Image (cartoon, rainbow, N blue to C red; front, side, top):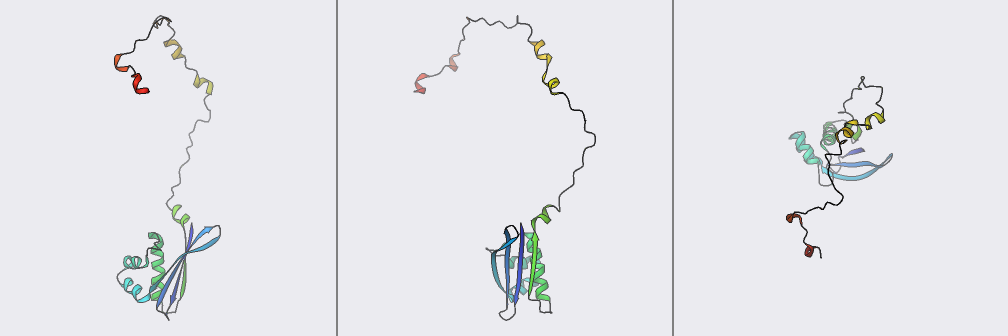
Amino acid sequence: MRQKYVVLRDDEKNELHIQEFAELDKEILSLLCGETYNIDTVKSAMADGKTALIAALRTQNMYPPGIYANKIADTVTEMLKAQNGLSAAEVFLDDLDYVTKGRVETAIAEDIDEEAADIDDLLVDDTIDEEFADDEDINISPNSSIKIADDDALDIEDDV
């Protein structure tokens, strides 16, 4: 999913606005959330380090993943340190950039047997016929009865 974060600096109100957009439809970015921060609070968090800045920027409504939060924090730091009056910045992020980054290329096996075995040869197994070819060992008479052990008898009353 592609996302865009817009960081706006409003010096008149001493506020920093961050808006989160996401591609919910193809090629259309929709506004998901917007947060407003006091610039003095953000600068104080910046002084305590990047981790503190990220913690200050994350809210219940906008909680970007770590990779995204790092990029947003870098943009906010650059914006607030800049003396050139930079008042707006955009951060574009795409999940595919991070998914394909760690992908390992697999090697193609070159020594595959090109000639496949005949399926009929695989299905025919003569050893089974040889093992049971002697009918003398199996002695079942059609009139024999099967005796059920007492433990295996069914209790008819339970079935009703």
